[in-house]
Length: 457
Image (cartoon, rainbow, N blue to C red; front, side):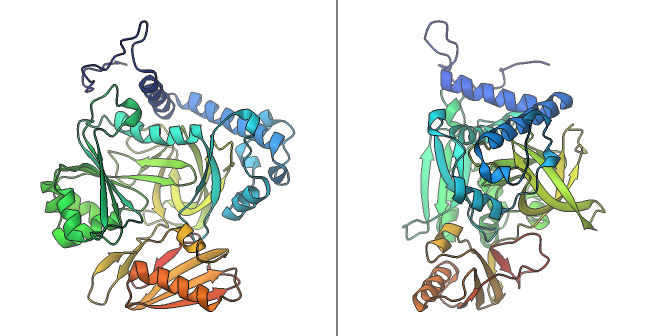
C-alpha cells in the first residue's frame, strides 16, 4: 500500500505552526476518522465482522443496563453471548413507544451531547429519536469519506439542492461558502460550496443560479433535477459544468441515468435514511449495486416469496445502527425491499444491496402532461393536528386524497387546515379530500409511503 498525498490539494499553509504539531487538531481528527472508515469498509473482512459483532454486544450491554422497554423484547443475560439474530424485528411503532416511555438511554452523567431529531415522515409515520454528537460527526465525515475512497477530484465545486421553507418570491435562496469539507478546510483546498434551498421554484431563476458558477458535484433529489431537465434538457447540465450527479433521498431512474450518460455525466446514488444516515453507496463500477456502509450499519434482508426482475430474491430491509446508543435501532424495518449479496460484482469484499424498491418519486402529474415537485415534511402535517399516520394519494389529474390515520373524525378547522397545506404545496386547482380513518389500509404493501402518485406511470 502506498500512502501519498501528492495528488491531494493541500493548502500552502496546511500545517500547524505550533511546536510538535503537524496538522490542526480538528482537521487531523476528521482525517483520522476518514481513514478509520476506509479501513473498516475496504479492509480485512474477518476483522470488520469481528468489530461489528463487538459493536452489537456493546449495544446489548447498553440496553440491558438502561432500557426496561428493550428488556421486555429480549432477555439479555450476558451481552457477550448476544447475536444479532436474537433480537426481534423493530418497527417504527416500537421506536415511537420506546422514545415516549423512556427517552434517551444516554444519561446526564455520561456528559454526551444529545440532539432530538425527527424523520420527514415519508413513510407516513414520522419518528422522533435522539442522536449523540458522535452520530452527527460520523454522518458528516462518512459523506466526505466517499470522495476519498473513490479518489474524486476535491478541487471541483459542490452544489447542493435542498427542499425547504423560504420567503423568496423566486422560490430559491442561496448560501455560498469558500469550501465544502468543513473540518478539513484548514488542510485541504476544495472547490466552492453552494447550497440552494428551494420551494416551488421559478425554474428559469433556478437555472440562472445553477449556471452562474460551475456546478461540479450536483447533490440533489432526482425530482428537482428532473424538473429542471424537463425545461432545459440534459445539455444544460453539461454546459453548466456538472461533473457528477449524486442522487439523494430518492431513486434515480434508468431514464434519468441514460440522459446524463448521453452527455458523459456519471450518476451516483446514496442509500440512506434520516434515522442513522448512510446505509450504502452506489458502486462506481457497477451501477445499481450499493456497497453497505459497514462502519455504520449491519444490513439484513428478510426474504419475501417474490423475485426481482433479474431473478434475485428480494426481501424487507432490516438495518442495525451500530452507534445508536441514545435511541437504539436494531434490526429496524425501514420499509424498503431489496436484494442482498455477500460481495459486489466489482470485487468489493463486503455486502452489497441491489434491486432497492419502495421510494417512489414525489411528483404530481398535471392534465397537460407536466410534472411538478410535491414534497411535504411529516412535521408540517403533525403541526396541523394529532394523528398516528397519514397517506396522500394523487388519484386524478385534479384530485388528491389525504388519509389521516388514528382519527375517527376531524373538526372543520382541521380539515380546512390540511386542505390549505396540500393546496399550498400542490396548487389551488386541486380538489382535496381529507379522510379521517381509525386505521389506514396499507394492503400487502411492504413500503408505507406518505405520498403515492396513482396516475404516474
